[in-house]
Image (cartoon, rainbow, N blue to C red; front, side):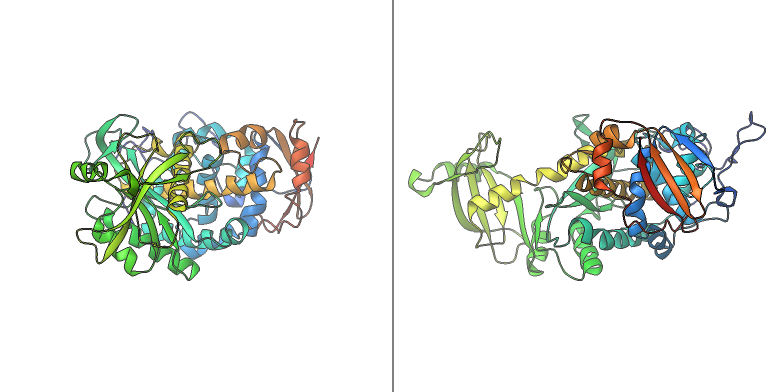
Length: 465
């Protein structure tokens, strides 16, 4: 286990000492999160301004989230077991909260406590401290169970993945961290490097790892391939990534595993001069007919080249007409796909960058300011789970299958209502009148919903004003 940080270490914007007792000094009778204090008496009614969060209950119940947490062997206590601890942290991700220290905004909302299986959500000291009690193996086991059970619902035939790095900036005092390029700052700075993988067809994030250093980052692609093999029993068929992700030696290892890849080669001055000296007869034409794409007519040269530290030859497709002055060099070990298909498929790699942008803007991935990688790792894992929850919600709502989390949150999740215990073993979530309630009624997400396992097996029903 990782020791709790000293009081001078600011975690996720929280200035408080992580070892402090979870009590308010000026509150003589503070409400403390306790699973045993949860009351489910018939007739009890809990109003809330965020009733839409219960829309995620059917998914979490179907995937048996409590069993996934138990199998991952997360730490817990008698007052706040592991399942309730993870659900309380996941609640912040689902509700567009920037920092764990802001969890106190929800301490008076008993309905949100009910969502996590508690009487109220825990105080910020618990939320801040919990991540220091977890290890990388916990995150890997939970991700394996989550992906395996989510796959039949969202990506049953997953084979192609876009992968990318993301640097999470550190904003605290001087820290022993590697410097990585931060796009928002336009320069390199102390940061924690995170690796994400996205299933291409569904657009669902399915893997995250922030326990990386500059010395070990070259192994991350092998780690993901091993993760997918152990989880699904097969290797990925296609991997799409940019030139900075791996070295040529890493590409050679991917090729040895018979996994197809497409990446970009860095343009050297000599390469550009040679390509520009080629006669016009060697350049062929193609049309990239992606809707709304600005540059659709391209020219390309398809050839085989040798690379340093790469065993054998690799296919290089030099392309002009993509809006850049110099040719773009695509590298792939797949020799049968047409150059047009290679370019079009790689263009869709932007999906992982969009997903990372959503993770920063809505799930607040960059709000952490800890220098402890395993603290950030738990937050990144919760980001993957929250992203999967919103993608599932989007697929259930007719006409919103491509909606982003912020749109879904504003139109459906941020809806006032009340939760009422209408009979032993039955909960009713009543949504107040909203223009989009007919879409929820049509989706009927509570239909065939299994009992909620962390609430003594109560069933949930949805009603709309």
